[in-house]
Length: 295
Image (cartoon, rainbow, N blue to C red; front, side):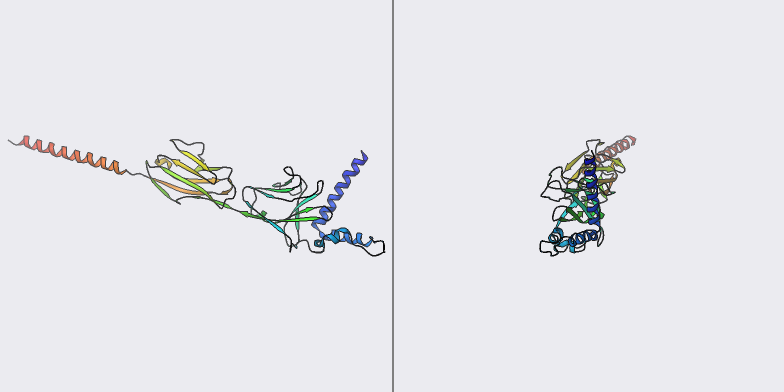
């Protein structure tokens, strides 16, 4: 029992040391310098520690990423951004950090434990035990920037990933306002621009009411991979108003629909014929009455 307690204490102390070295590189440099001071070879010459020899980045400020390979990952706002960190050995400590300023990084995760107050960040290797992935739920503009994955092997490995975010937007064909005649079909087509991931859903709103599952009169919503279409077979005055296309991962768009009272060409012809017949009959009746009045 005492051995297990001592082992847990050692792990906690190790993580604290690693975190201190990560946030303040001067701690690591002092530790390496002290170690080098007491480390001599067989000939009595001073010998630097293994980490100092094999990790030239230790001699540089923490913010310098010059001449290092930086992977670029593009993700879409409103989805999940995934950053990969490949490892060669199991049972190693892996840290994910986010660059904040010129010379500071914020600790996000230590293995599967999240150390950030923002719980949108979490790390996992469940799908592949040789790949510690950092997941960012619903990424926003402030999440863009440089991330660092530190793998505590000998020598320590550092992987840099730059996150770039893309904001998709919805667009309704035809723009606003959209004018339709009463009795004519109303068709609203919404497509996503700059989208790299399909949305989980696209909701249609008429004013403040979501209508995807509350359609009447033969109206229907048809979904595609990067868009949606609302079709109302016969527009009536109550269909007028503001319509919004609201995707899960893109900026929404609205359009104003105006339903005009009008008559089709056939209806106008039918009314004209009826009026013509009416006036002809009226004219004949008047002529007949006048003939009867004459002596």
